[in-house]
Length: 90
Image (tube, rainbow, N blue to C red):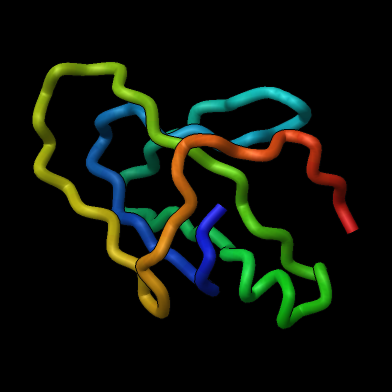
């Protein structure tokens, strides 16, 4: 998950973003013109767990260089690829 509060990502159709859902990694589908919104750990704490941080990762599934950059709106720090999969919902 992200350390900060909120991350917005405009995808370009190149696959690779995955979210931890129902105890497995699931691809995040591309929806043309839509933003992917990741809730960060800080926002989860601020809301006492009403909004849960999104456990996610990016995997390389293509050799295409899409040139896209993820930009955090409030905080750009992120956790590396070693994620804790034993989180429980509040």
